[in-house]
Image 1 (cartoon, rainbow, N blue to C red):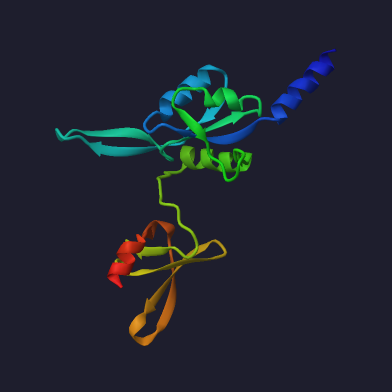
Image 2: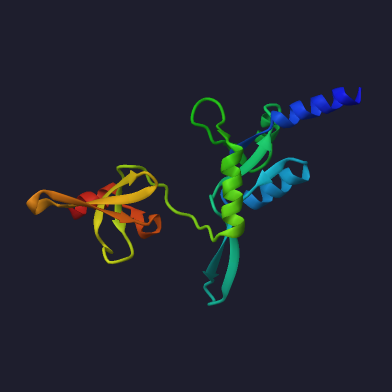
Length: 185
């Protein structure tokens, strides 16, 4: 009988998946605390940021690395219960079903937030217009490309219809709004 109990516990544990929950703005910590008190495993990656208030006081605060998102590990049966929590708006989904986040990605996020200084960075896609914000090419605009694990920016000189590609750090670029890029061209 004890073996049957262990098998059902293993099946339950195996059916747990990580999901990204969309949370009301500035309610991430409170929702994580409530879910944790109900024995649901959650992960809220935080980063430390220095804020200066209007009165000139400097304070270090822990802010969500991904504002409005919280990771929760749940079974398919817990999903309805998660949606009923105050502050939970829904699941992050790429289709009609909530997207499962692989355990490896959560593990990498945990490592990055615990042992490295992780900070938010705008999401960039191949082909996005970007502006270089630091280094010798500060202010240049181009198109983001990737080669293996390296970020590269294609810089074009329209007058001679030629382009070059330079390797950059992801921290040296920021997304460029299409309107601003078109206005600058």
